[in-house]
Length: 132
Image 1 (cartoon, rainbow, N blue to C red):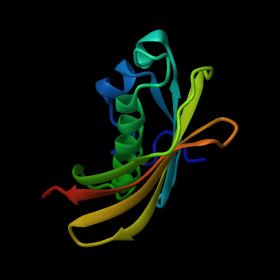
Image 2: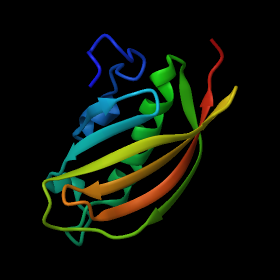
Image 3: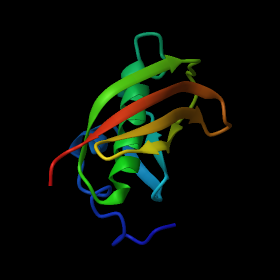
């Protein structure tokens, strides 16, 4: 696991992640893991984890993984497939893995799963590198 002085851009303050109870578990140049603590406000009207939170976790894992190269990125394109949901979990995890780093676009594969490994979503996110 990286020290807190590594991956500074990936670790920059993110109020939206804080608001949604999302924290970084680990970061490397090619992979990141995030954890979200589920609250009543994280759920949809049916008691399941809200799809927006699942999407947010995927987007955040992609951004954090892309920024591990110490460049700034914004989301360019997202393709998400929702595969399942749960009602009785306190935490879920998102993992981002670099598929390709280009000159201006980094493509990240992201999944969201339960602690036990049940897949909730699978997706591909393209992150656009901002000019320095």
